[in-house]
Length: 335
Ligand code: GLY
Image 1 (cartoon, rainbow, N blue to C red):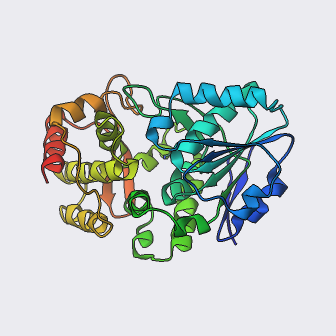
Image 2: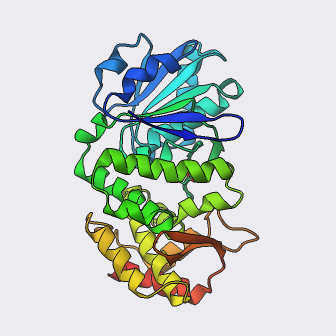
Image 3: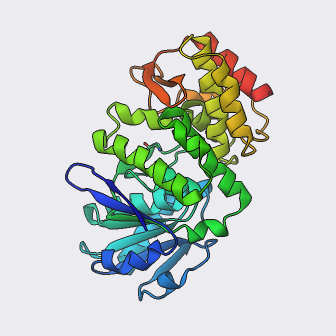
């Protein structure tokens, strides 16, 4: 079993990675326990073995709404989930975000165990304490920072993961390679990939839990990515949208002379090796640009871009002229 510590000041926790990580679940449970699981996820014996109510919910981005949160809160009330209780979130990023947010506001916060079942959730969303839901116009606009007690990344879930989900997760893996650790690009073993990405994330989150600066580096590709996702009505997988967003970001980086032009092709090839970004929905440049204005990283009305200097080195806080953004978005929508 691999273990990575997320050393967030005041509430550090482990991420356990490997086939069988779920066997450790019981040792992290307190009080009344409520399991919130994506109904599409196969039930592993360790989960059916714990005697607690199992709430099956619909996964997918469409489930991440305030209405979904209200339903969970009603179930917590019905099940008399007390202050010493534990919410266990079993599923991909959408379930972790939704159940995590509900756990963070129920009785002003109860313990949360994250059991990510997709590659994307294992390498990114289940780690670091971001929880939340979408509004009609912006992704994750309502949310909280609520660190889990433990993350159990049981890699047995990956064996039955649909190819589309696996490809989506690979987009975040490429993100880590481009933004922080180029060595990730050469790895093939999924368990090793999860560990290396979690190490990157743990290091960043430990230094900047609340995204006051450094943590923004994890949003490489997400400005245009989130805009495409929102403009598509969340019909496009998050990972594919982020892959398209990274294609825009590297082009902007090269246009500003921040990185070598050859990095554009290098990143395109890394993404293409996983079939990313694939076919995008029919969107106009104007639709995507309008959606970028809802980006949470805006400060004083200006977007702050995360851009590349070289492979494995992203930097924050760039203000990019509108015509350069427009050109990059037009290019990635048409190629
Ligand atoms: N997914 C980016 C972050 O957790 O900060």
